[in-house]
Length: 341
Image (cartoon, rainbow, N blue to C red; front, side):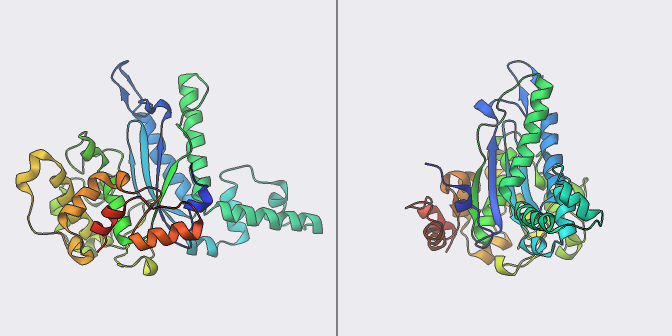
């Protein structure tokens, strides 16, 4: 039986979540259908554009994404500090970019006086909207509803576009976050539809690499200094802040240079035709986190299979389950122990 969303998403426990959604019947509704010859590739661009637009409205950052032919992956971060800093006018302004808002909110924004009943109604609306602006469920609802409407309108049909509600995984620690981001960014390479980071279309790693320099490859980029890499803006993507602890971070708790070194090493190890080119020296992040290369490569290939609704150290997963009363067991015991020393 599925768990309630409120049991699987708790920003006080971790702000990082991996979410997945599939097209109905797993059809090629975002890619190219080889049976009919019809291409739906442009719809993948719809999804990327929409997640960036919503990220600017919601207090939710995009750490990684990959839009495949019949599903997409996102790694999202709830920006708790940003949500706490929103003023009443910020809340109304942001929410009204999603919906029509409410007449009482419009009256307040225009500077008109509110009677007691209207003031009470406004307070209730502000509390509700404020909560929704840091809700992954509402973020996903706004994303999926618009894409479904556009696709059905283009196909001149009605009915479900998505297979069901999105699936989510709580990422409880640095190793889980790193493994999940790598799993998402390497999706096209793992699926055999891309042979490099630059050719991994509709992924966050392609966007990050191209933002740095579209004319040089990942190994060359990884040799640059971390300071130079940090100076390049990542547009709507969450930034790497270099902290190694989730509790101390304001963005993604790694240096981008180290992440780029590791993802290039991992991507080459996944490709059969590149095995002889792999550098035997372990990437810096694996050394810092104490992760063995074999355990890392297994996780990069099978992260989704290793873990269920949560990912992290074994004791952290069990504690999460206990606190949120969302199951009697934790999937991923052996793999989590291998990846988390």
